[in-house]
Length: 269
Ligand code: CMP
Image 1 (cartoon, protein in one colour):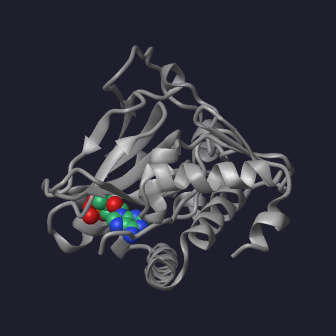
Image 2: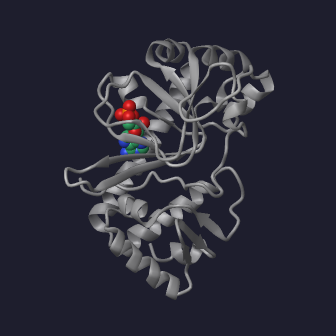
Image 3: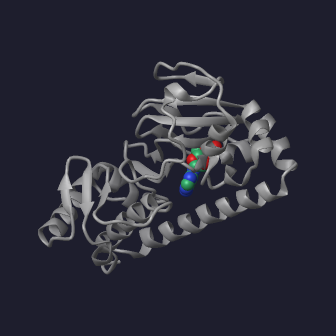
């Protein structure tokens, strides 16, 4: 399938941050991969904040958080770094604590399809962890990102002891499948303007999932990435965005799209 698009949660501006720890304040198990880190243990309220609002781990109480953290490690990736490539063996799962991660796959002729953009509060790497197969896509840090990494041998026993966590996990996987179904449908049936409007509305709404939506919506996403999301060339995306700019529906800057009125864009879907 040439163009699977958007789980997309927005990038950068307005994205909900589940934690407010810069890398240097993350706790004792922190393994910096791209930067300096001074190390200290987290207090229990910091641990709780770490998971506040997290789609999967937000339901855990202090004891479970301690148990999970005792098996997990923190990793920091600078913007642009590959976290893992498609096809690599996957024996761990990652929770995004800060930053944003692009899930994508590249065709033989170098075209990238963006399957999802994941922000703080989301997880990835669960597919290979659960089925023991290879990674199904590349994962790349889009901005400086903090991840909590949990190995399969620790997470599966943890899941087995928590049926409520299993249900949350199934919910999350169902939501992803639902979105993937939607994007297959739109990729097959919708015109580019409609696909693009849908992707922008989703990016903007996901940015506000934890807060009241407040216009203007600022999306830090490149036109190339948008092309990867909607399955179109950067040139065609640019043409459409410029037409909308002329019509006053949005403003364009470098890696930035400002949407003053989301309803007007939604009306185009
Ligand atoms: P895994 O296959 O281990 O590694 C790549 C990860 O990307 C995968 O687990 C999922 O977490 C994530 N992923 C793959 N496809 C999608 C998709 N269509 N939507 C959202 N996330 C995906």
